[in-house]
Amino acid sequence: MEILELQEIILSLSDEQMREVYSLSSHMSLESIEELAPTLLNICLESGGKLKDDLGRVIFHLQKTERLNTRIGFEKLLHGSLRVNAEETFKLLESSEKDALNLSHELKKLLNK
Image (cartoon, rainbow, N blue to C red):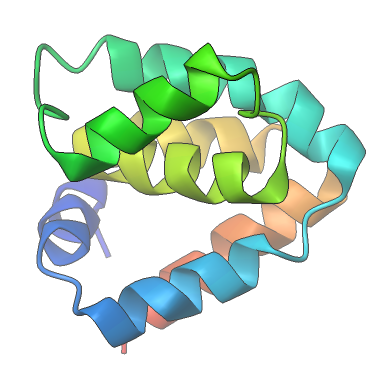
């Protein structure tokens, strides 16, 4: 499946499907979360205003309270970065540690259902 198609699927995910995405991301190690969080934040910040919604406010609040390196922070950053630039997000995951690579594969399987 092409990245552009994945981007469209991500934008139309139901609440239940998003819970599955969050569940998959909860298996990441804290070391990987700390490594990936800054880059995921940059992907979100470079969105050109695409995250001016509740998710964007949550990410901003987590950044302000220095909690982006937590599991919840990672879940929200992953969600935001997938929404604004799925291609860059998957490239990042696939070039990182084994748990991030596994997350990428599991996300693609989930999105291909």
